[in-house]
Length: 258
Length: 244
Image (tube, rainbow over all chains, first blue to last red; front, side, top):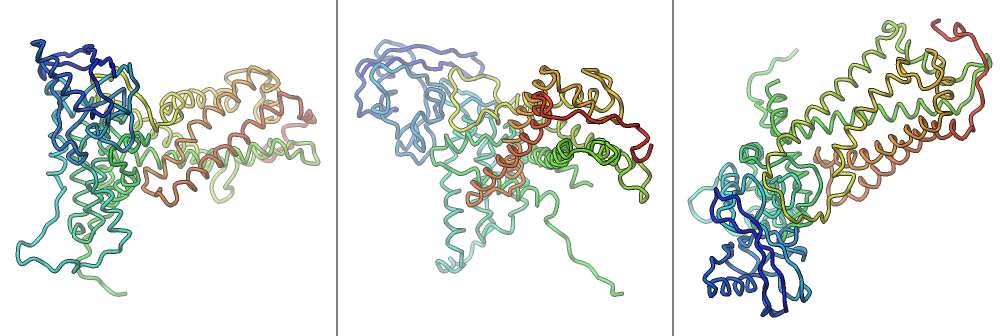
Protein backbone atom coordinates (compact mmCIF):
# COMPACT_ATOMS: atom_id res chain seq x y z
CA UNK A 1 0.00 0.00 0.00
CA UNK A 2 1.01 3.56 -0.70
CA UNK A 3 -0.25 6.28 1.60
CA UNK A 4 0.22 10.00 2.07
CA UNK A 5 0.35 11.25 5.65
CA UNK A 6 -0.22 14.74 6.99
CA UNK A 7 1.11 14.71 10.54
CA UNK A 8 1.07 17.44 13.20
CA UNK A 9 4.65 18.28 14.22
CA UNK A 10 5.31 20.38 17.29
CA UNK A 11 8.72 20.29 18.96
CA UNK A 12 7.63 21.51 22.41
CA UNK A 13 4.73 22.93 24.44
CA UNK A 14 5.68 26.45 23.41
CA UNK A 15 6.24 25.67 19.72
CA UNK A 16 3.45 26.82 17.40
CA UNK A 17 3.43 23.55 15.43
CA UNK A 18 2.52 22.77 11.83
CA UNK A 19 1.35 19.94 9.57
CA UNK A 20 4.02 18.03 7.70
CA UNK A 21 3.51 15.70 4.76
CA UNK A 22 5.14 12.26 4.40
CA UNK A 23 4.77 9.52 1.81
CA UNK A 24 5.01 5.84 2.76
CA UNK A 25 5.06 3.12 0.13
CA UNK A 26 5.93 -0.02 2.06
CA UNK A 27 2.70 -0.20 4.07
CA UNK A 28 1.11 -3.64 4.43
CA UNK A 29 -2.66 -3.99 4.91
CA UNK A 30 -2.12 -6.27 7.93
CA UNK A 31 -0.18 -3.57 9.79
CA UNK A 32 -1.90 -1.88 12.68
CA UNK A 33 -2.10 1.90 12.50
CA UNK A 34 0.60 2.20 15.15
CA UNK A 35 2.88 -0.23 13.28
CA UNK A 36 2.46 2.04 10.27
CA UNK A 37 3.55 4.93 12.51
CA UNK A 38 6.54 2.84 13.64
CA UNK A 39 7.44 2.28 9.97
CA UNK A 40 7.24 6.02 9.38
CA UNK A 41 9.51 6.66 12.36
CA UNK A 42 12.06 4.09 11.17
CA UNK A 43 12.13 5.83 7.82
CA UNK A 44 12.54 9.25 9.48
CA UNK A 45 15.33 7.93 11.72
CA UNK A 46 17.20 6.46 8.77
CA UNK A 47 16.86 9.80 6.99
CA UNK A 48 18.32 11.48 10.09
CA UNK A 49 15.08 13.29 10.90
CA UNK A 50 13.26 13.54 14.21
CA UNK A 51 10.70 10.69 14.56
CA UNK A 52 7.05 11.52 15.31
CA UNK A 53 6.32 11.35 19.04
CA UNK A 54 3.06 9.55 19.83
CA UNK A 55 1.58 7.91 22.90
CA UNK A 56 1.03 4.15 23.01
CA UNK A 57 1.27 1.43 25.60
CA UNK A 58 -0.72 -1.82 25.64
CA UNK A 59 -1.58 -1.89 21.90
CA UNK A 60 -4.57 -4.07 22.70
CA UNK A 61 -7.27 -1.43 23.16
CA UNK A 62 -7.48 -1.16 26.94
CA UNK A 63 -4.94 1.37 28.15
CA UNK A 64 -6.29 4.45 26.37
CA UNK A 65 -2.90 5.91 25.52
CA UNK A 66 -3.00 5.96 21.71
CA UNK A 67 -4.56 9.37 21.30
CA UNK A 68 -4.76 10.50 17.69
CA UNK A 69 -7.36 12.30 15.65
CA UNK A 70 -7.27 10.50 12.32
CA UNK A 71 -9.01 12.18 9.38
CA UNK A 72 -11.01 14.34 11.80
CA UNK A 73 -12.18 11.49 14.01
CA UNK A 74 -10.83 10.53 17.40
CA UNK A 75 -9.19 7.08 17.08
CA UNK A 76 -9.95 7.09 13.35
CA UNK A 77 -12.79 6.01 11.09
CA UNK A 78 -13.71 2.69 12.70
CA UNK A 79 -16.27 3.11 15.47
CA UNK A 80 -15.75 1.63 18.96
CA UNK A 81 -12.08 1.04 18.13
CA UNK A 82 -8.92 2.53 19.61
CA UNK A 83 -6.14 3.68 17.27
CA UNK A 84 -4.01 0.63 18.14
CA UNK A 85 -6.80 -1.71 17.05
CA UNK A 86 -7.20 0.14 13.76
CA UNK A 87 -5.55 -1.66 10.84
CA UNK A 88 -4.28 -0.36 7.53
CA UNK A 89 -6.81 -2.59 5.76
CA UNK A 90 -9.39 -0.08 6.98
CA UNK A 91 -7.84 2.42 4.54
CA UNK A 92 -7.70 2.40 0.76
CA UNK A 93 -4.47 2.11 -1.18
CA UNK A 94 -3.28 5.63 -1.97
CA UNK A 95 -5.23 7.08 0.96
CA UNK A 96 -4.45 10.53 2.29
CA UNK A 97 -4.47 10.46 6.09
CA UNK A 98 -4.49 13.46 8.45
CA UNK A 99 -3.12 12.78 11.94
CA UNK A 100 -3.55 15.39 14.67
CA UNK A 101 -3.29 15.40 18.47
CA UNK A 102 -6.33 15.81 20.77
CA UNK A 103 -7.25 19.50 20.58
CA UNK A 104 -8.26 20.99 23.92
CA UNK A 105 -6.85 23.74 26.10
CA UNK A 106 -7.01 21.29 29.01
CA UNK A 107 -4.88 18.80 27.04
CA UNK A 108 -1.78 20.82 26.09
CA UNK A 109 0.40 19.27 23.38
CA UNK A 110 3.67 18.08 24.87
CA UNK A 111 5.23 17.07 21.57
CA UNK A 112 3.86 16.15 18.12
CA UNK A 113 0.88 13.88 18.88
CA UNK A 114 1.51 13.51 22.61
CA UNK A 115 -0.81 15.51 24.86
CA UNK A 116 -0.77 15.98 28.62
CA UNK A 117 -3.95 14.43 30.02
CA UNK A 118 -3.21 15.09 33.69
CA UNK A 119 -6.44 17.10 33.80
CA UNK A 120 -8.32 13.76 33.78
CA UNK A 121 -6.21 12.51 36.71
CA UNK A 122 -7.10 15.63 38.68
CA UNK A 123 -10.81 15.08 37.97
CA UNK A 124 -10.45 11.52 39.32
CA UNK A 125 -8.54 12.78 42.35
CA UNK A 126 -11.36 15.22 43.09
CA UNK A 127 -13.86 12.44 43.78
CA UNK A 128 -13.28 9.25 41.80
CA UNK A 129 -12.90 7.04 44.85
CA UNK A 130 -14.93 5.25 47.52
CA UNK A 131 -14.27 5.03 51.23
CA UNK A 132 -13.51 1.49 52.32
CA UNK A 133 -12.34 -0.19 55.49
CA UNK A 134 -8.91 -1.73 55.39
CA UNK A 135 -9.80 -4.62 57.68
CA UNK A 136 -10.53 -8.25 56.76
CA UNK A 137 -11.59 -8.94 53.21
CA UNK A 138 -15.41 -9.14 52.94
CA UNK A 139 -17.00 -12.28 51.50
CA UNK A 140 -17.44 -12.06 47.72
CA UNK A 141 -20.94 -11.00 46.67
CA UNK A 142 -21.83 -10.10 50.24
CA UNK A 143 -23.57 -6.94 49.06
CA UNK A 144 -26.54 -7.79 46.82
CA UNK A 145 -26.67 -5.66 43.65
CA UNK A 146 -29.46 -5.69 41.10
CA UNK A 147 -27.98 -7.28 37.91
CA UNK A 148 -29.11 -4.48 35.53
CA UNK A 149 -27.59 -1.89 37.80
CA UNK A 150 -24.33 -3.84 38.03
CA UNK A 151 -24.21 -4.18 34.22
CA UNK A 152 -24.90 -0.46 33.68
CA UNK A 153 -22.23 0.50 36.21
CA UNK A 154 -19.86 -1.85 34.39
CA UNK A 155 -20.70 -0.16 31.07
CA UNK A 156 -19.63 3.15 32.61
CA UNK A 157 -16.53 1.51 34.04
CA UNK A 158 -15.36 0.48 30.55
CA UNK A 159 -14.17 4.09 30.13
CA UNK A 160 -10.40 3.89 29.54
CA UNK A 161 -9.93 7.62 30.09
CA UNK A 162 -8.38 8.15 26.66
CA UNK A 163 -9.90 11.59 26.13
CA UNK A 164 -11.54 10.87 22.77
CA UNK A 165 -14.78 12.41 24.09
CA UNK A 166 -13.02 15.74 24.65
CA UNK A 167 -11.26 15.51 21.28
CA UNK A 168 -14.52 14.73 19.48
CA UNK A 169 -16.75 17.27 21.23
CA UNK A 170 -17.18 20.49 19.22
CA UNK A 171 -17.12 22.23 22.62
CA UNK A 172 -14.13 20.33 24.03
CA UNK A 173 -16.32 19.11 26.89
CA UNK A 174 -15.27 16.33 29.26
CA UNK A 175 -18.81 15.49 30.34
CA UNK A 176 -18.78 11.92 28.98
CA UNK A 177 -15.56 11.04 30.85
CA UNK A 178 -16.67 12.72 34.08
CA UNK A 179 -20.17 11.26 33.91
CA UNK A 180 -18.82 7.75 33.31
CA UNK A 181 -16.50 8.04 36.30
CA UNK A 182 -19.20 9.56 38.53
CA UNK A 183 -21.73 6.93 37.43
CA UNK A 184 -19.76 3.71 37.77
CA UNK A 185 -19.16 4.54 41.43
CA UNK A 186 -22.42 6.35 42.13
CA UNK A 187 -24.63 3.53 40.88
CA UNK A 188 -23.21 0.87 43.16
CA UNK A 189 -23.92 0.50 46.90
CA UNK A 190 -20.24 0.98 47.77
CA UNK A 191 -20.27 4.39 46.12
CA UNK A 192 -23.31 5.81 47.93
CA UNK A 193 -21.65 7.61 50.88
CA UNK A 194 -19.84 10.10 48.62
CA UNK A 195 -22.36 10.01 45.77
CA UNK A 196 -23.50 13.64 45.78
CA UNK A 197 -20.25 15.19 46.97
CA UNK A 198 -18.50 13.22 44.24
CA UNK A 199 -20.77 14.64 41.52
CA UNK A 200 -20.19 18.18 42.79
CA UNK A 201 -16.43 18.03 43.28
CA UNK A 202 -15.67 16.18 40.04
CA UNK A 203 -17.79 18.61 38.01
CA UNK A 204 -16.17 21.55 39.74
CA UNK A 205 -12.69 20.18 38.94
CA UNK A 206 -13.77 19.54 35.35
CA UNK A 207 -14.82 23.19 35.06
CA UNK A 208 -11.62 24.58 36.51
CA UNK A 209 -9.56 22.51 34.07
CA UNK A 210 -11.13 24.52 31.25
CA UNK A 211 -13.17 21.85 29.47
CA UNK A 212 -16.17 23.27 27.60
CA UNK A 213 -19.84 22.78 28.38
CA UNK A 214 -21.99 19.95 27.03
CA UNK A 215 -24.39 20.84 24.22
CA UNK A 216 -25.98 17.42 23.77
CA UNK A 217 -24.47 16.73 20.36
CA UNK A 218 -23.72 13.07 21.25
CA UNK A 219 -20.51 13.40 19.24
CA UNK A 220 -18.57 11.99 22.23
CA UNK A 221 -20.65 8.80 22.30
CA UNK A 222 -20.18 8.30 18.54
CA UNK A 223 -16.38 8.64 18.75
CA UNK A 224 -15.83 6.88 22.11
CA UNK A 225 -13.77 3.72 21.49
CA UNK A 226 -15.81 2.01 24.21
CA UNK A 227 -19.16 3.36 22.98
CA UNK A 228 -20.07 4.87 26.35
CA UNK A 229 -23.64 6.19 26.27
CA UNK A 230 -24.60 9.83 26.82
CA UNK A 231 -27.21 8.34 29.16
CA UNK A 232 -24.47 8.74 31.80
CA UNK A 233 -24.33 12.47 31.08
CA UNK A 234 -28.07 12.64 31.79
CA UNK A 235 -27.46 10.71 34.97
CA UNK A 236 -24.67 13.07 36.03
CA UNK A 237 -26.92 16.07 35.29
CA UNK A 238 -29.58 14.56 37.49
CA UNK A 239 -27.14 13.73 40.32
CA UNK A 240 -25.51 17.15 40.09
CA UNK A 241 -28.92 18.83 40.22
CA UNK A 242 -29.86 16.83 43.31
CA UNK A 243 -26.45 17.52 44.85
CA UNK A 244 -26.81 21.26 44.28
CA UNK A 245 -30.44 21.73 45.23
CA UNK A 246 -31.50 18.89 47.52
CA UNK A 247 -28.77 16.66 48.92
CA UNK A 248 -27.44 16.28 51.52
CA UNK A 249 -30.40 17.20 53.64
CA UNK A 250 -29.73 17.88 57.29
CA UNK A 251 -32.80 16.40 58.95
CA UNK A 252 -31.49 16.24 62.48
CA UNK A 253 -33.14 18.26 65.24
CA UNK A 254 -36.21 18.45 67.47
CA UNK A 255 -39.70 18.80 66.14
CA UNK A 256 -42.74 20.31 67.78
CA UNK A 257 -46.29 18.96 67.73
CA UNK A 258 -49.42 21.04 67.24
CA UNK B 1 -30.48 30.92 47.83
CA UNK B 2 -26.88 29.81 48.23
CA UNK B 3 -27.76 26.58 46.47
CA UNK B 4 -29.35 28.46 43.56
CA UNK B 5 -26.20 30.55 43.27
CA UNK B 6 -23.97 27.46 43.26
CA UNK B 7 -26.15 25.98 40.55
CA UNK B 8 -26.05 29.20 38.53
CA UNK B 9 -22.26 29.31 38.73
CA UNK B 10 -21.76 25.78 37.37
CA UNK B 11 -21.89 24.85 33.69
CA UNK B 12 -24.42 22.08 34.34
CA UNK B 13 -26.55 24.51 36.36
CA UNK B 14 -26.52 27.01 33.52
CA UNK B 15 -27.64 24.26 31.17
CA UNK B 16 -30.45 23.43 33.58
CA UNK B 17 -31.49 27.09 33.65
CA UNK B 18 -31.46 27.14 29.84
CA UNK B 19 -33.64 24.00 29.87
CA UNK B 20 -36.16 25.33 32.40
CA UNK B 21 -36.47 28.76 30.77
CA UNK B 22 -36.73 26.96 27.43
CA UNK B 23 -39.60 24.93 28.87
CA UNK B 24 -41.38 28.14 29.94
CA UNK B 25 -40.94 29.61 26.46
CA UNK B 26 -42.11 26.34 24.91
CA UNK B 27 -45.22 26.51 27.10
CA UNK B 28 -45.81 30.04 25.84
CA UNK B 29 -45.57 28.84 22.22
CA UNK B 30 -48.20 26.16 22.93
CA UNK B 31 -50.56 28.83 24.28
CA UNK B 32 -49.71 31.21 21.44
CA UNK B 33 -50.43 28.70 18.70
CA UNK B 34 -53.68 27.62 20.37
CA UNK B 35 -54.78 31.28 20.49
CA UNK B 36 -53.75 31.85 16.88
CA UNK B 37 -56.03 29.06 15.71
CA UNK B 38 -58.99 31.25 16.77
CA UNK B 39 -58.39 33.01 13.45
CA UNK B 40 -60.08 30.02 11.83
CA UNK B 41 -63.12 29.76 14.13
CA UNK B 42 -65.04 32.66 12.56
CA UNK B 43 -66.92 35.56 14.13
CA UNK B 44 -69.54 36.25 16.76
CA UNK B 45 -73.13 37.13 15.82
CA UNK B 46 -72.21 40.79 16.12
CA UNK B 47 -69.53 40.24 13.47
CA UNK B 48 -66.54 40.40 15.77
CA UNK B 49 -63.87 37.86 14.78
CA UNK B 50 -63.13 35.42 17.61
CA UNK B 51 -59.44 36.33 17.50
CA UNK B 52 -60.26 40.01 18.22
CA UNK B 53 -62.40 38.96 21.13
CA UNK B 54 -59.63 36.67 22.36
CA UNK B 55 -57.12 39.55 22.15
CA UNK B 56 -59.46 41.63 24.26
CA UNK B 57 -59.87 38.75 26.70
CA UNK B 58 -56.11 38.53 27.20
CA UNK B 59 -56.05 42.19 28.23
CA UNK B 60 -58.67 41.75 30.92
CA UNK B 61 -57.99 38.10 31.85
CA UNK B 62 -58.09 37.48 35.57
CA UNK B 63 -60.67 40.19 36.31
CA UNK B 64 -62.11 40.78 38.84
CA UNK B 65 -59.70 38.66 40.91
CA UNK B 66 -56.81 40.84 39.75
CA UNK B 67 -56.99 44.23 38.04
CA UNK B 68 -57.31 44.23 34.25
CA UNK B 69 -53.94 43.77 32.59
CA UNK B 70 -52.25 42.38 35.69
CA UNK B 71 -52.25 38.80 34.42
CA UNK B 72 -51.14 39.87 30.96
CA UNK B 73 -48.28 41.97 32.29
CA UNK B 74 -47.36 39.29 34.81
CA UNK B 75 -47.07 36.76 31.99
CA UNK B 76 -45.13 39.22 29.86
CA UNK B 77 -42.64 39.83 32.67
CA UNK B 78 -42.15 36.09 33.27
CA UNK B 79 -41.56 35.59 29.55
CA UNK B 80 -39.20 38.53 29.26
CA UNK B 81 -37.26 37.30 32.29
CA UNK B 82 -37.12 33.77 30.83
CA UNK B 83 -35.88 34.97 27.45
CA UNK B 84 -33.21 37.18 28.98
CA UNK B 85 -32.06 34.42 31.31
CA UNK B 86 -32.11 31.84 28.48
CA UNK B 87 -29.94 34.11 26.31
CA UNK B 88 -27.63 35.10 29.18
CA UNK B 89 -26.74 31.56 30.28
CA UNK B 90 -26.37 30.29 26.72
CA UNK B 91 -24.04 33.16 25.78
CA UNK B 92 -22.05 32.64 28.99
CA UNK B 93 -21.69 28.92 28.20
CA UNK B 94 -20.67 29.64 24.61
CA UNK B 95 -18.02 32.13 25.79
CA UNK B 96 -16.77 29.58 28.32
CA UNK B 97 -16.62 26.81 25.72
CA UNK B 98 -14.98 29.02 23.10
CA UNK B 99 -11.79 28.92 25.18
CA UNK B 100 -11.72 25.12 25.35
CA UNK B 101 -10.15 24.57 21.92
CA UNK B 102 -7.63 27.30 21.09
CA UNK B 103 -6.14 25.44 18.10
CA UNK B 104 -8.71 24.18 15.60
CA UNK B 105 -8.46 20.83 13.80
CA UNK B 106 -7.14 20.90 10.26
CA UNK B 107 -9.64 18.17 9.47
CA UNK B 108 -12.71 17.59 11.57
CA UNK B 109 -15.66 15.33 11.01
CA UNK B 110 -19.06 15.14 12.71
CA UNK B 111 -20.37 11.64 13.22
CA UNK B 112 -23.44 12.29 15.37
CA UNK B 113 -24.06 16.01 15.89
CA UNK B 114 -27.19 17.03 13.99
CA UNK B 115 -27.40 20.25 12.00
CA UNK B 116 -30.24 21.65 14.17
CA UNK B 117 -28.02 21.07 17.22
CA UNK B 118 -25.02 22.73 15.60
CA UNK B 119 -27.16 25.67 14.46
CA UNK B 120 -28.74 26.44 17.85
CA UNK B 121 -26.85 29.72 18.31
CA UNK B 122 -27.71 30.88 14.80
CA UNK B 123 -31.39 29.89 14.98
CA UNK B 124 -31.63 31.32 18.50
CA UNK B 125 -30.20 34.70 17.43
CA UNK B 126 -32.62 34.86 14.52
CA UNK B 127 -35.54 34.04 16.84
CA UNK B 128 -34.45 36.73 19.33
CA UNK B 129 -34.40 39.31 16.53
CA UNK B 130 -37.76 38.07 15.29
CA UNK B 131 -39.38 38.43 18.73
CA UNK B 132 -38.46 42.14 18.82
CA UNK B 133 -39.67 42.62 15.26
CA UNK B 134 -42.89 40.67 15.89
CA UNK B 135 -43.82 42.78 18.94
CA UNK B 136 -43.13 46.01 17.05
CA UNK B 137 -45.21 44.69 14.15
CA UNK B 138 -48.35 43.17 15.65
CA UNK B 139 -48.39 44.35 19.28
CA UNK B 140 -47.33 47.99 19.20
CA UNK B 141 -47.87 48.63 15.49
CA UNK B 142 -44.61 50.57 15.31
CA UNK B 143 -43.51 48.72 12.19
CA UNK B 144 -46.23 49.18 9.56
CA UNK B 145 -46.32 46.43 6.97
CA UNK B 146 -49.99 46.93 6.14
CA UNK B 147 -52.95 48.64 7.72
CA UNK B 148 -52.79 48.49 11.49
CA UNK B 149 -55.33 49.47 14.10
CA UNK B 150 -55.11 48.39 17.76
CA UNK B 151 -57.60 45.69 18.66
CA UNK B 152 -58.56 44.74 15.10
CA UNK B 153 -56.39 41.63 15.20
CA UNK B 154 -58.04 39.82 12.29
CA UNK B 155 -57.89 42.80 9.94
CA UNK B 156 -54.30 43.54 10.92
CA UNK B 157 -53.30 39.95 10.15
CA UNK B 158 -55.20 39.98 6.89
CA UNK B 159 -53.62 43.22 5.78
CA UNK B 160 -50.04 42.22 6.62
CA UNK B 161 -50.17 38.62 5.46
CA UNK B 162 -51.73 39.42 2.09
CA UNK B 163 -48.24 40.71 1.30
CA UNK B 164 -46.28 37.63 0.13
CA UNK B 165 -43.00 38.97 1.52
CA UNK B 166 -44.41 39.45 5.01
CA UNK B 167 -46.18 36.07 4.98
CA UNK B 168 -43.13 34.37 3.46
CA UNK B 169 -40.85 35.95 6.04
CA UNK B 170 -43.06 34.78 8.90
CA UNK B 171 -43.25 31.26 7.47
CA UNK B 172 -39.45 31.17 7.13
CA UNK B 173 -38.94 32.23 10.75
CA UNK B 174 -41.47 29.61 11.90
CA UNK B 175 -39.35 26.95 10.18
CA UNK B 176 -36.28 28.30 11.98
CA UNK B 177 -38.16 28.07 15.29
CA UNK B 178 -39.04 24.49 14.35
CA UNK B 179 -35.37 23.67 13.80
CA UNK B 180 -34.52 25.27 17.17
CA UNK B 181 -37.24 23.30 18.96
CA UNK B 182 -36.41 20.00 17.28
CA UNK B 183 -33.10 19.90 19.16
CA UNK B 184 -34.12 22.11 22.07
CA UNK B 185 -37.10 20.14 23.34
CA UNK B 186 -35.26 16.82 23.40
CA UNK B 187 -32.14 18.52 24.76
CA UNK B 188 -34.22 19.75 27.70
CA UNK B 189 -35.04 16.16 28.68
CA UNK B 190 -31.37 15.18 28.43
CA UNK B 191 -30.15 18.19 30.41
CA UNK B 192 -32.65 17.56 33.20
CA UNK B 193 -31.55 13.92 33.30
CA UNK B 194 -35.00 12.67 32.27
CA UNK B 195 -33.91 10.89 29.08
CA UNK B 196 -32.74 7.29 29.23
CA UNK B 197 -31.99 4.65 26.60
CA UNK B 198 -35.38 3.01 27.27
CA UNK B 199 -37.38 6.19 26.62
CA UNK B 200 -34.99 7.94 24.22
CA UNK B 201 -36.89 6.97 21.08
CA UNK B 202 -40.22 8.02 22.56
CA UNK B 203 -38.93 11.36 23.86
CA UNK B 204 -37.22 12.20 20.57
CA UNK B 205 -40.26 11.25 18.50
CA UNK B 206 -42.60 13.14 20.84
CA UNK B 207 -40.33 16.23 20.74
CA UNK B 208 -40.33 16.22 16.95
CA UNK B 209 -44.07 15.50 16.70
CA UNK B 210 -45.04 18.34 19.04
CA UNK B 211 -42.63 20.68 17.25
CA UNK B 212 -44.09 19.82 13.85
CA UNK B 213 -47.64 20.30 15.18
CA UNK B 214 -46.82 23.71 16.69
CA UNK B 215 -45.01 24.95 13.61
CA UNK B 216 -47.77 23.78 11.25
CA UNK B 217 -50.26 25.60 13.47
CA UNK B 218 -48.23 28.80 13.29
CA UNK B 219 -47.63 28.54 9.55
CA UNK B 220 -51.33 27.91 8.88
CA UNK B 221 -52.17 31.55 9.72
CA UNK B 222 -49.91 33.48 7.29
CA UNK B 223 -50.32 30.74 4.67
CA UNK B 224 -54.13 30.92 4.79
CA UNK B 225 -54.19 34.71 4.51
CA UNK B 226 -51.59 34.66 1.74
CA UNK B 227 -53.52 32.20 -0.39
CA UNK B 228 -56.75 34.16 0.11
CA UNK B 229 -58.51 31.37 1.97
CA UNK B 230 -59.69 33.78 4.67
CA UNK B 231 -62.92 35.82 4.39
CA UNK B 232 -62.95 39.53 4.95
CA UNK B 233 -64.08 40.53 8.43
CA UNK B 234 -67.29 42.49 8.80
CA UNK B 235 -66.92 46.11 9.84
CA UNK B 236 -67.65 46.52 13.46
CA UNK B 237 -67.29 49.31 15.97
CA UNK B 238 -64.54 48.98 18.48
CA UNK B 239 -66.88 49.58 21.44
CA UNK B 240 -68.62 46.27 20.73
CA UNK B 241 -65.60 44.57 22.27
CA UNK B 242 -65.69 43.95 25.98
CA UNK B 243 -63.83 46.44 28.07
CA UNK B 244 -64.19 49.30 25.56
